[in-house]
Length: 470
Image 1 (cartoon, one colour):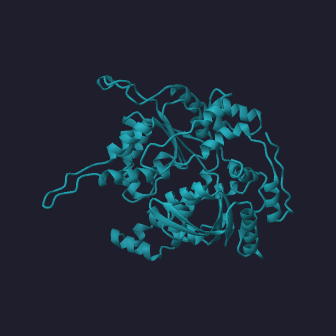
Image 2: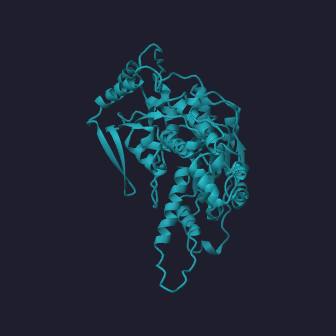
Image 3: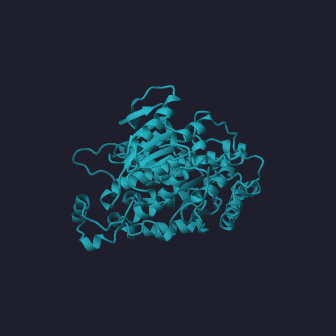
């Protein structure tokens, strides 16, 4: 393992940056097999996704996820955590049970016989930064199944809706004067996905969108009936999913389906490991009130851009036949404002494309996010989740300290909220209990955002995100 070289707190940001760029670190072999899994984003395409098999090869010296965890404890890469160990013991057993498992019929006669009962999956929940994603990725890297996918839940649902749209578009158009036959695309979509994967690992299982909430029961019921095994991580217990959401009564049956096919495990050690003391990669979070903050970011961008084989120029990204323009980029470095990234109609697919193209993104002028800016806050949460999953590095300029960016001010005075309340026939006091108006879901999710942005400022994360030597 490469030794950690602490950076002097007296170094200027530009000195710290130059120091990091000059260093040559040896690979962190033990942890790499796990962290490589974290870099796999969900490709938002309505077609089979090719899986890498590098994780198993790199970790061949270990027998399974629990053995890998023990190795990292002995190597002092991790500290032993009884809560993580308890979850890994369950996942290690599932890893053994899944050896050679497939939901694909072995012959044309298979449909005439009783299908083997697939093993139960796991739904792992707990507070932010407790290691849920890490233990799931350890399990995933050793899963010896024919077809498996590790997907971010938000990206997965985006892909599901794209598949539904594609199937609906492929239906014959209704003839004039004739009633169109009702067509339900959910079961065919579930069958498509089942053919591509018999093991699905979901990171950040969270339901905030009514369009997702209304189809989850039917979608997952079909996935489970088709023999798909699910392992998921979440910050919420199953019974709290889509809490106070619109038409939640129609969502509640999904919880019973999830609990039928997945055992619930709690991983809550009370420690946010992302916030534990680790060497920082110089200063990467700046306040607008600091003197010369803008000039400092300009200098950091110029120093990174100097290493690129490109010129500083605007970039236009092509995302599903849409043009997304960024005003300033150079090679794998993008210099953006908050308004560019979060104050226009962008979503997970746009952020996925940015993560593919850039290894470092500057985000300037993040304002105070009140309830009047819930939409922008949701985009920032999605953006940070996507960048974190792909080990993209960030440099931030904000109006307030990280912990104070999002505040719950109890103000429901936003015109869009009033229009929606009127459309739904809701009174102000009735709407205050719904998460879509209260900001409760954003407040909950933002705890994860703060935790992840804290880790993204560490030296270890910064070095892992450097793609120049890859």
